[in-house]
Length: 378
Image (cartoon, rainbow, N blue to C red):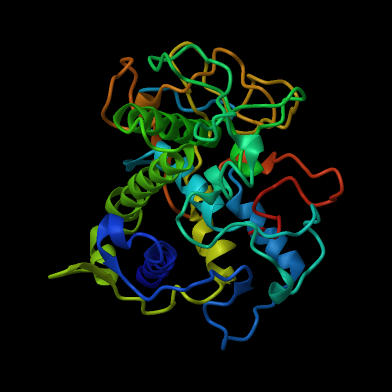
């Protein structure tokens, strides 16, 4: 477990080290042009090979059976990890989508050479999943003023009266930098929160610097939002997930700030496939069986196997039900509360909730619906 958490920490810090120097005082070598491919963290190890029947047998044991009588709210659930609130599961997914996205077509069955893959994300914590290349290169994400990101419809049901869905086109497709952030309502809610945060910073900068151009306002707003995002990862997310001791072994204080001790990886290397499709998948074990998004709606699973019926689960890729505003006090501690209890994530172990055996399938794929059986994607 120690080597596992150290590898996660090392990789995430390596990805962040290129761009967090001014925000968090992290000192590390930088690369003029980030790599757009995938490599291997341990290139000298022979490739693993397993019998497919054995893998399917193992997957069947990993997937939890369906619960006919789910644990009622307020009662002790043996699967819950009370040290890690449920919101961290989906913030981890948001981070993952900001670092790596391979360019394979929707084919989950055909083996492919790692070296042939192209990473659709910059392998750094720079929020390109939110901004892409900015308002000039990606105008579809922005208002005509070239400063504000587009926002979606107002949602109700939460203490957050400004809650919004993702911006969408006439067909309901999300207008965002990474379509995967519309996979479920919770990660979509996190993406929407970053849109709102950016727009709030823009408004503050416009009020304080009336002489600035739109480009100056946008650049400064993106810089400030990205720094806050990186600090959340370095100061909160990673210490909670891997532990302070592991963090301290990789990120060390110096008289000039902090420096990274990159034992297994250099931030000038390609995105390691072991990290993007293996180590960072621990988050799947953290997914709960049921979630309450607010006190106005019933608990629902992430996936139910019935697609195209918004409201019976948390599947995205369509406009959110109007009463699905996320009450973040049910996912994270602190802030204004509706009176409900903070939901815990599930334990990081060898068990995956049955909801993840009901994933939607790409139209062109014959891959299994059970997550534990599927080959990983970056």
